[in-house]
Length: 329
Image 1 (cartoon, rainbow, N blue to C red):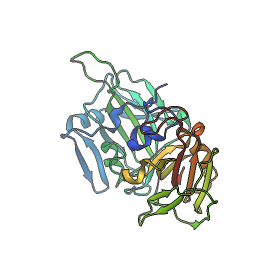
Image 2: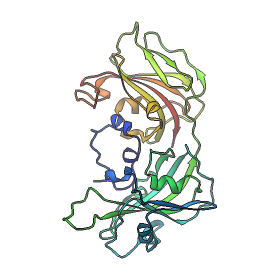
Image 3: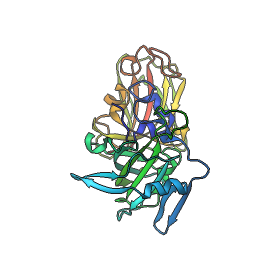
Image 4: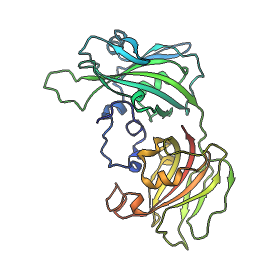
């Protein structure tokens, strides 16, 4: 089933695609969620923060929608069909919780509704798991970023975006998906692991950190393991990661020959994603590690991408990651 609510795969950095357990094709939300708004988009701010984002006409569309509730779950009521021309947001009610700052991890409860007929397309209430996003410019649709940062936990907002995956006849409007979004939490996260250094086992790649905390590895004198290695390098003092959590991490990845293929440090933003959407080696290697820790993972092919190529990663590769666990929720 296609997931129409806002997944981390869709809204996260492009680098995240190389870590998903499935192929790089996105079976979640349409790619328009990461599209930049048109030049005509504008933000309206008050003393409490930005309350709307988008063109005047698109914001007017969102203001015709009534925020309702059925059985404790939010619902959007409008006369279908309804559409917008670009990503647009409108704050329907202010929150009274903590103010959301740049770099925070924000938890959202989301209901997705088809603009073409008002039908429910899915929600986090059905899955039982809220979505978590890191408030970094470029890591989330600007239309959402604008009305989250500077506002408060507890606010509700209506977000809409054209469903570019839909098939329409020439001259017809592209249908839109409308989202009822409730901000349920926000937490400040660090940008690197902190805690006590741990002496690693002999024979593993040697990890060196630069002044900012970004890692590099030296494979001199090592022999490639055939089984998963999960070596704590820095032990944090947070709670242990569980299999059902969403994690926020900074990481760099190499194939065993030392060639780097991915890095959130280079991308400039941490990765936030449900652990279940990451390769099996991450799932097994991070569960039980403490938040705040830095972990060296050596992942054999059967727990990585097996005999399939994955971008610049050759088939049958053993993978090496240095992972800073910044948050888990």
